[in-house]
Image (cartoon, rainbow, N blue to C red; front, side, top):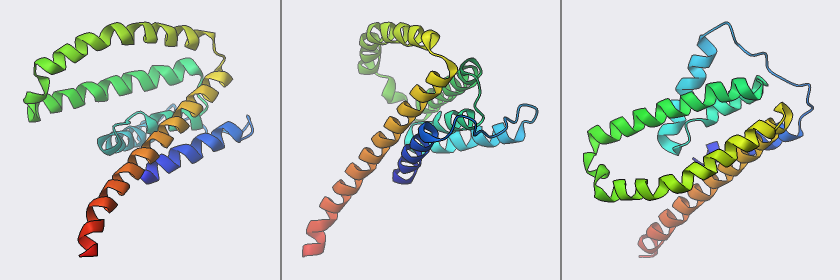
Length: 166
């Protein structure tokens, strides 16, 4: 998680600072590269809970227009989230108890206005500014992963520390 978080921070910084003309040719005619990117996203999502990062990085490298990038990333994330919920329902059905449904009902009125605001902001951004915002958010997500990893390391060190002292 720490390595992936550091990669996201560094990649986002690089993407924000690199010259506008640099790009990787989009593999629009083939299925191999996009399939590998999708598989990598699934693996990464399994341990970081951030499956869209690989697809966002790929679409950024290809410098896809914002509408094309969004048309790829959003269904990909939705599909993986539905798959994850299905697997969770099969493996741990107790997760979907009354508390889950109450929290979902409380969350929806908060998420919907935020979604509408996000769509409005999306419509107002140029392709260049969309990429900038995307990379800033990607870097912020990387920082979050680094903080999560640092917390896990600190907790591990604290639990091992007393045992080593004896």
